[in-house]
Length: 215
Ligand code: ITT
Image (cartoon, rainbow, N blue to C red; front, side):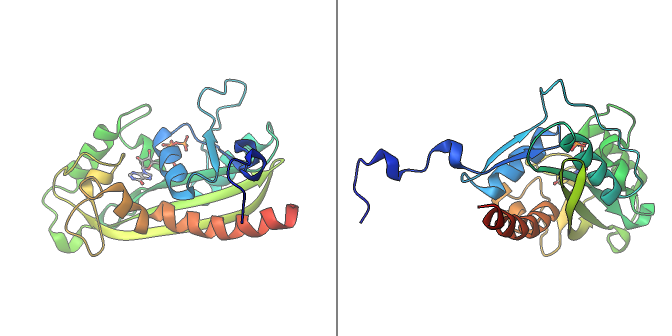
C-alpha cells in the first residue's frame, strides 16, 4: 500500500505530459483540454509572440492542419498538434469548409458567419439541410508531420440560431440523433460525439504508444 503523506509518491505536475496546440482559437484549446483530461498539460500559441502566424493557404483541412503543425513545430521542442476544422453544408457545395473561420470576411465574428450560412440556406426544407463538422488533426515535430487524424459528425442545419453553448457554428448544427443544436446540448454531450473528439480519440491512441516508446 502507498504510505500517506509521502510526497515522493505523488506525481509532480512537471511529470505530466505536455502538448502544444498550434492554435489561437481558445475554444479549441478548452475543448481539447477537457477531452484529454487533467493528466495532460495543454497550452496553445496565444500570446507567444515569437511564433509566426501561419497562413492557411491550403484548400483541404489536411493541408491546413499540416501547415500549422509543421510551421509551429519548427520553432519549439516537442510535438505540436494542429486542428483544422469546419462546417460542410451539402446544399452549399460543402461550403464554408476550410473557409469556416472567415466565411463572412477576414476577421469576422462567429455570429456573422452563422448568419451568412442561415441567410444562404433560407427557405431550404429539412430534406436538403444536411451538413457535417469535420476536424483534421496533424501532429508534427521539428517541421515534419508524424501523423494525421480525421473526425466527422453528420447532422442537419437548424432554421435559426438556437442555444448559447459551444462556439462557431454550434448554435445552428443539430448532430445526428438529436433535435437540439450543439449550442443547446451540454459540452459533455458534444464531446461524446463531436468531430474533434473523434479525431482526438485516434490521436490519444497514437500518443499513448509514442509516450511508451520514448520512456
Ligand atoms: P486556428 O487556425 O488558430 O486553429 P481558427 O478558428 O482559424 O483557429 P480553423 O481555421 O480550423 O481555426 O477554422 C475553424 C472554424 O470552424 C472555427 O472558427 C469555427 O467557426 C468552425 N468550427 C470548428 N470546430 C467547431 C466546433 O466544434 N463547433 C462550432 N464551430 C466549429
